[in-house]
Length: 185
Image (tube, one colour):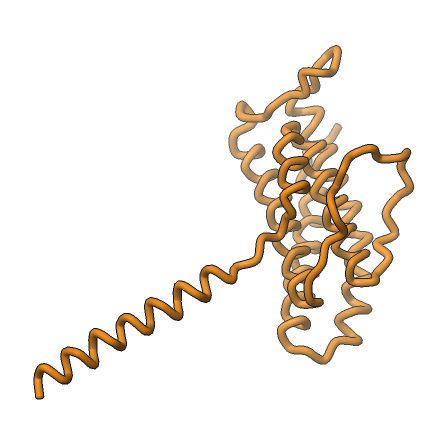
């Protein structure tokens, strides 16, 4: 009797570990390999934030939503194939990308000496020059995204998607509020 309980317990543990391992293995990367390379190469904070915003715009386009991105000169960067995924996955990507941009800004705010300057520039920009640009660029993108997300939230009946949209809108509000905390120029 005790032997049967022990075997049952061991088998239960093995099943739980197997299921947990499979769930972990199904985790989705929010960046494609090409995009990850571009982010890795964008070391200066303002360039990195602009890169993440471009990647978020690509997710909105994949959702069939025009992110109303400002028109820029022809981009010669190879961003890789257009992003794919379910609506829930793409919304999750947007949330993760916004959070990454916030985390990158927060990390540099806490330790400005870690900021990497663009060495290709004749006179590399300082933290005091780059930091406000990065925050303002992200806030401008958040201002563009919020009404789009509110419209999508009103159309969505899926609870998971509604929750993701609400989380993204909260992030947009945090980003917009952060501009008021910047020191006066």
